[in-house]
Amino acid sequence: MTDSDLVRRALACAPTDLFIGGAWRPAMNGATFPVTDPATGARIADVADADASDAVAALDAACDAQRGWAATSGRERSEVLRRAFDLVISHTEELSALITLEMGKPLADARSEVVYGAEFLRWFSEEAVRVGGRTAPAPEGTLRILTASRPVGPCLAITPWNFPLAMATRKIGPALAAGCTVVLKPASLTPLTAAALVDLLHQAQAPAGVVNLVTSSHAGHVCGPLLADRRLRKLTFTGSTPVGRSLLAQASHNVLRCSMELGGCAPFLVFDDADIDQAVRCAVTAKTRSNGEACNAANTFYVQRGVVEEFTDALTQAFARLTLGPGLDPGVDLGPLVSSSQRQEVASMVDQAVAQGAVRRTGGVVPESDGYFYPATVLADVPPDAAIATSEIFGPVAPVVSFDTEEEAVRLADRTDYGLAAYLHTADLSRVARIAERLEVGMLSVNTGPISNAAAPFGGMKHSGLGREGGSEGIGEYLECQYIGLPR
Image 1 (cartoon, rainbow, N blue to C red):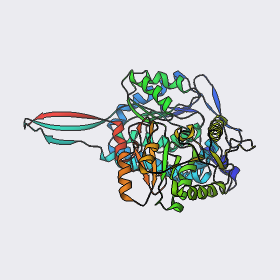
Image 2: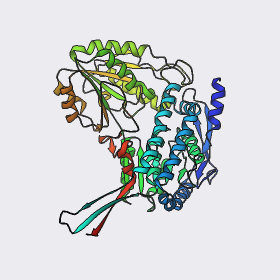
Image 3: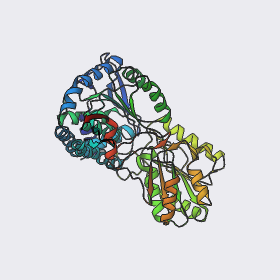
Image 4: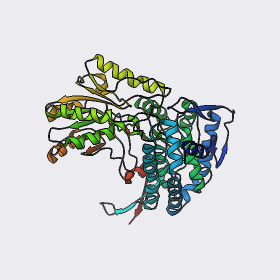
């Protein structure tokens, strides 16, 4: 199959209308907005541009469907999600190509996202039949305590552009498993993958109104009215911390249940007893996955002084071998960044770090091309107080900062407002235990790379968010606990 054949098949899988109440339809005002390929800057589709009236119509549909969906058995909800899992897997190539077309990651990386994203549908299909409660006598012996779980209600799910499939399944999976209906608002840069997923859920026989899709180039125009509507009961958002703060403020007026997966600035700690070859292999994966545009990507590399030159040299060689190019081309390791503005932000951070004393070991120069490409970059001798060391980079840039002691390493790693993930490489298990107890992060990867898994809770501390997605903890975000007291 040629690339053009795959592209045609992929685009054919992605409706460009809104999906409301079980039907595809254009925006009420007839407006559309363009979707472009970051590898070329070329327009690949025009998508319905919803306004407030479309958003309210989607919530109407979700509310109309809520009671009936909540009343279905766990097994029925499980079967819908399991059918959706099978459909996503059977459309892996088309969905992968859509992801690459919209946000730029290499096709092999996009395939990994499809498999990862599909797992949330399978995992929560299994969790749907395990929602329960407990019973116990009160300590005084006068009451019997019963607890029951019930769905929160209609949910607004706002997803980012960097994992357009997986971030949607990570929210829709537990919501549907719990008995909640959903209005999905995907990022305007990557609406096609979300539309393809919603169409597959429709094919999986999700009832009308259970999943609704509202695409828009102006998120505030569609999300604001929903957050102000008392019928909405849950907000789940993945994106930047500043946007998350704004949404939390809006959600507070109706005291909405909120799940927030926000920014990250993950430290990658390498001690002098680490296996350096293994650490470098894991560093490449943790830094360049999704072109470095991941909230849990390794951000700053803190390396003990005794091995800092060995690690930096090896990482530089590994980065220099990476092939930069359009994600659909064979053999490409690193695709374009998602937009011109994103590339400019990354380039500015690198230039500022160099002005502060950092040394470019490889990369660090914007190539001449039509797309939004930025090379894999290693910065050595980065001052610990350089802005790049404590800011979320969201690009394939590895700043290396040296440290002397374990105490210093923990202090440097924990100094940001973020606390999503961290990476630790050491042969000392006692050190692992000490650092795990001290680092304020929701996830710690030890002697390996990214550890995201549908069966594990994903989420952070501090300004990295609220709640957890995935694992047995994930479905609880969509359930209310009801206590019933009975006489004994």
